[in-house]
Length: 208
Image 1 (cartoon, one colour):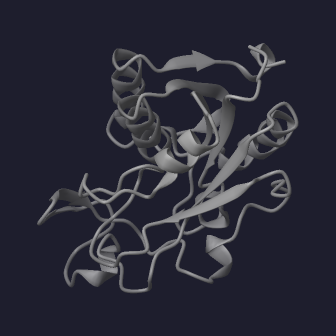
Image 2 (tube, one colour):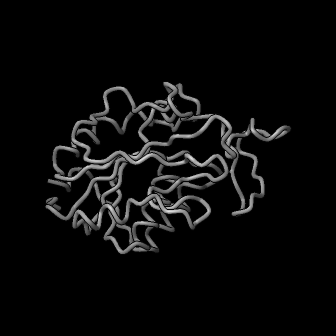
Image 3 (cartoon, helix red, strand yellow):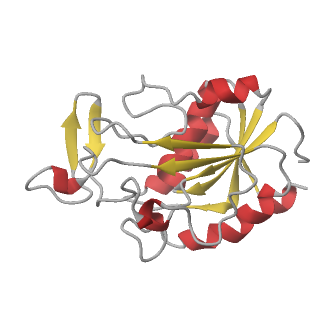
């Protein structure tokens, strides 16, 4: 694959809190920084996603007395996994990973700002109604293919890839530039859903 004017690299949530030692670490999450930096130089269009939660966000376990991280609660929009407090707006943990190149990005899209609704996807919040505006921004730029990398494969990357497909984009996920959390088999299920939806796996070496 040789990226052209209609291709975009979408870098998902490569933030301090998702790295080893962070509030919600993805195993091996720091290993994606180098391949993502290399990939950015192969694309003319780069967008960075950033988890950006208010301190009282509904997805935080400590917002629900008596609940623990990774419990599930029922919310108006459906089941919600509860997470350790992470990526709070303006906190060091919400910052981009040390060493991640950000200068090539033409757009930074922040998600999870509504305290009442979680947001895994770069395109749609967890209520499956509220749009981030990213799909429209990409169409205005003439983008037809979205190539994803970042964290975590089985949550924000997978949801973003599936929503990109639903929005009509051709979608690739760079296998060696993503890492997953893998809660009770969530990683295998995520890859299965993506493949069933027509999302293709690709290695960074295939992008030249």
